[in-house]
Structures are given as C-alpha cells and as structure tokens.
Image (cartoon, rainbow, N blue to C red; front, side, top):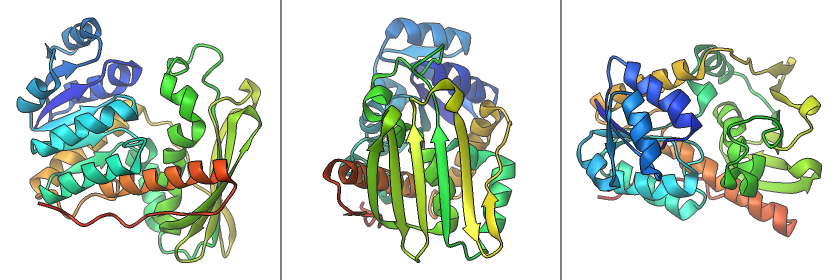
Length: 307
C-alpha cells in the first residue's frame, strides 16, 4: 500500500517514518510537513519524496499516516477521506467532536479502512490481556497516568497544544483505550482540576461500571508513573505494561490497516475511527465538566454512515 506521511516532528521522525519505510506491506511515497526544510530532510532520510502541497501527496497515495497536532491532523484527515484514502491517524483524532464526526462519517460512507494509533492496543501482551478480560464482569477501573514532559529534555515539552490541553487530551486517550474495551461505552462524566495541572475524571459506563482517571503532563519528576487497574470479582487486576518498541507497535498498526483495507474497510478494527471519535466525545465532555463543575452526558453513539 502506498503511504504518504504527514508530519516531521519527533513522532514522525522516530516512529511513523522508520516503521513505514521498513514495513513489507507499505511503500512510503512522500513526506509533507509545515516546515518544508524539515520535510525535505526527513524525506531524504527515509528515501522518499518531499511534498510542498497536502493535496498533491494525497493524490499520489492510497493511505495517509498522520503525525501532527490534532487541530492540524483533522482537516488533513478529512481531505484524505474525501479523496478516498485510507487513514492511519494519531490520537486524539481532533480537538472538536464535530471534526471527529465529519471524518468518521466520510470514511464510513466511503468504506475506507481507518485506524487510530493507541500505542498499547497494538502490543501483543496488552491485546491478549484485553481479549481475555472482556469475559469478566468488571465493576470499575482506575487509570493513573502522570507524566512530566515540561522539565528535562522531553521532545514533546515544546508542543503548544500539549501545554494548552494537558494530560486530559494527550494521555487521556491512551488510558481510555484500555478502559473502554472491558468496561464499555461511557454515557456521562464529571471532572475536576487539581495541582500540577492534573485532571481527575469520573466516568460512568453504560452497563454500570464506574472508573476514574488521574492525568497530567506536569507531574514532579519523582512522581511520574503509569498504571491502569481493573476491579472485578477477584479483586484489582493491573493491565500489563509492555517494553516493546513503539516502532514495532506502529508496524503492527500498518499491517492491520492494510489487512482492513483488503477486506473492504467495513466492519472495522476495534481501534478504528469509531473508537477515535468516541474518545474525543468523552474528552470534550470531561473538559466541559471540569470547567462547569457539573455531570456532563457523553454523545458516545457514532453518527450514521453517509454517502
């Protein structure tokens, strides 16, 4: 499958680009970035062609892989879907639910394959755990994801959207991607802001379970930690972590997208745009709840297909 890579930052340079260049089922055609010099440098490294125009690269490929801030990703993804291109997107899909709805409707209506790269969902140890866990009647869960990217040398600390939106929007999608498959869809949330730009979220799942998330990108360095725990009839059970390289996980996502496209795109993968859209709906509701101090309903039912 012929891919175009959109983005030239650390995620594109260290993960998307190498995985696409090395994958046996992918041909990396070209690279587009907001900085043409960076696009040229990355394209040279990956032995691909730099592109100056978004639509020119979309026209030359069958699928797009996007490693850009969500507000930049969303309009490119929509243009690619309208052109009939399969989508391999980063999380969150967008910063506005209307944008996520539009991309999903376009991709679904055209029968396109889509995946959102929730990293841990493409690691075998996590996949196997979640598949087995789906049969257990869990009654709750807890996700504590405390990162520290604004001190030290994190390549993501200079990201304006992460500074503005915080852990809720950056690492919240990863936590939700582990809670939703076993606890089910969320129909209402409440949220509260805390020290170190922490957002605490209370989630009510449709079938009854209740879970919590504590999220920040600005934890003290000694307080960094990532843990997701499920509560069930035999007590708390941690979701396993994985040390598998991120490039390998992205390579698995590439393979899944290619297989999904070969099968006609619909029905989709568990991490397709439907999940990506529902995650945006939960994050948007949590944002409102945090500001207003209320319980906010979540629009978690994907819109019908068009086309």
